[in-house]
Image: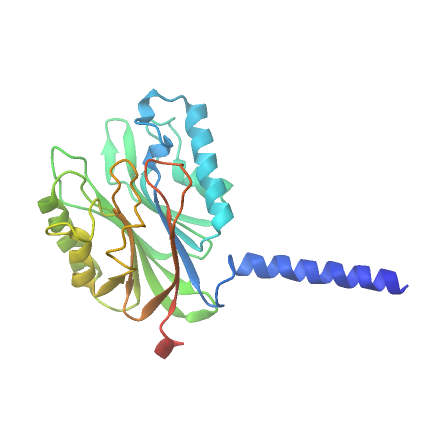
Length: 281
């Protein structure tokens, strides 16, 4: 009888551990919000272009992305170059597929390019409800494709009365003056200061660049970056540059930050653990 009781007790403890793991994705302080950003590169993986791949290859690449998300267990994922049904990437909704297989119950996709058989932009995946989502496409910048951002509000883990706005952004890859203009537009749309803000995405520039757009975004929105001059956090291995960023409000603080080594795109994913600053807890 004693053996049976011990067995039942062990099973109950194990079940409780599983539930805790589902609620808290890593060994971080309770109440930590874990976020991730990844330029998913139209589902092509680390290859040069998606147009030369079969749908089965695109699906296999997205499965690897989903496995990475499931392993890291972020609350929210910001995606860039995230496709809807597009002729060059299998003609199916990549964001919806990732949401399903990564077990992220909520998603929102912005269509910054939606013409000539192509549909893509930025997106959010989340284990938490996405409230008041919206999409902004920046002013046209020919000859480069349109870029933009999506944003939504979520309730802070364990603090349902506290909301935070999360943003997934992608800036122009070719011209710093276009990136600066796009940042001005983003600052104008997001600077009401109602909620703490987390901006994630592919800024296509480094902190130390002349007229850096990521630095301008941080200054304009009063955000902070994690060790902005650190050279060990590169996210675009081809050029050995750190161009994917997580920026957070002054009311927040980093408790974790890492660049992922997994080669699921030509970019590397970034994970950050964020908590409310001590005065807000």
